[in-house]
Image (cartoon, rainbow, N blue to C red; front, side):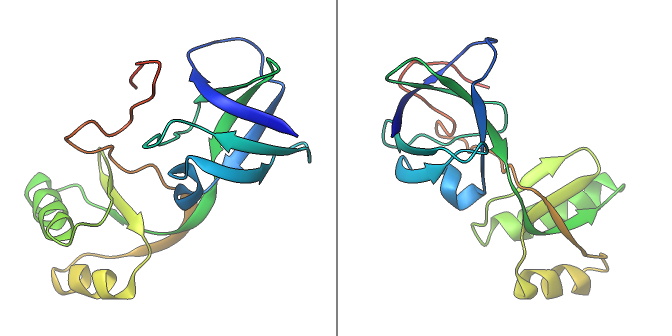
Length: 149
């Protein structure tokens, strides 16, 4: 079994890829199946959060690229900056991970949060999409090798 223990900064060709949802991308120790079907294990530094495009290196030298899996999310497309700020404030006040981009905010689907935003006059789009929330103000996306996205 391949043992991946390092997140690296490299443009080298990847041996394979590994598609994981958010819950899996925050686990530093787990058994996984690469997209090519090969079994592997992740043995990453505690607190590692993998994101789309990260590359992992196995003890034996193989490199894989991380892909963010499509998962059930609620996406709210908002063109009004004040309304966007209000939506993010109320969602953030509930301590939910948010993916914030120009024109939309996305979170893991939750009907209670959907109802709250509907009461604000917003339309919720239920989608299957990769979920890449903000890393957070206190370090977020860190690895032992020290690169940041």
